[in-house]
Each structure stands twice: as structure tokens, then as C-alpha cells.
Image 1 (cartoon, rainbow, N blue to C red):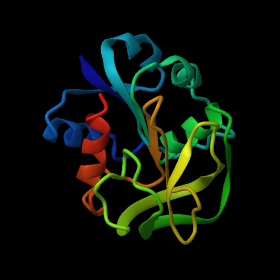
Image 2: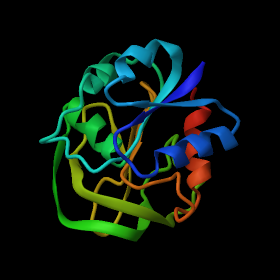
Image 3: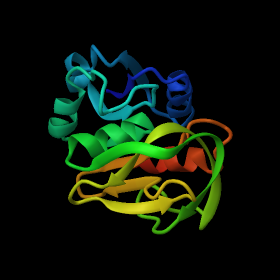
Length: 184
């Protein structure tokens, strides 16, 4: 079975697929409209980023999939926001839109940030941000402009990051993706 990569409009979805492949796993990209029908064929889900907002746009059956997936899940950028929004957290328009390199401060390594230094640079591209996590989640990292850059519910194997670990601009991005894939 494959890692199901749900394309929510990110310009980096194919980069996620390539990174998963380079880490020795098979990935399969599906559009958000078709993701529900492919869920049973996957070992895990990665929800890509994208230009949408969880507070205004259509996500088809993805919220229902998040609630019933029962398999490891990683949300990236918009995927991070969608996980928070769907499971009872709160997402709002950020104080300032970010696009570029940001310094990420690791507060707690947890599973997904295991082995990373206390601070690293990451590529960010977002307008909205998670301001309240769902129940059962712990915050792992923050930046100067975003209080929850990474969060996880290790028991349920649900992980998410506001930044883009799949691009070369993000230091230790391969390690973050590898940490997720070891949960599968």
C-alpha cells in the first residue's frame, strides 16, 4: 500500500511525493475530490498545503476522512490548519501573511521533530494560522509570527506542521518526513 498524498492545490505536492519516494516509500497523489474513495488503499495520509482557507473553502469529504482515518496522518501548511479546524481547534487569519524563510523554535521534539536542533530555518507560505489546538494535541514549535508551527497527537499518530518540510529551503525537512514515515 502507499502513502496517500492529498493534493489541496499546493505547488509542492509533487515535491512531497518525490521526498516520500526518496525515503523508500511509495506515494500516490490524489486530488482532494477523490481522496475519500482512495483512503482504504493507503497506509497513511499526507495532506498538502494549498491556497485555500479552512474557514471559507470547500474540502469535500476530507474532514470526515480526518475524523475516521485511523491511520498515521501528516498535515503540511493548509493540511495543518485543516486538521486543527476539523478536530476542534481554532484557525484564524494570521496577523501577517508569510512567504519565505522563517526561524522555527523547537519547544518540544515529540515524535515528528525528534532529532532536530532547538532552532532551524523553514520555508513558510501561509495567511491563516492555528491559534488553538484540538484536544489531545501538544504544541512542538513556534516562530516569531506563529505560535503553533508544529503539533502532534502521538497516540493517534496525527502530526502537522505550518511550514513546508518537503522543500530544500527547510533545514532538516527530510528528517521530519522520515520521522513521520517511521510511524507508518
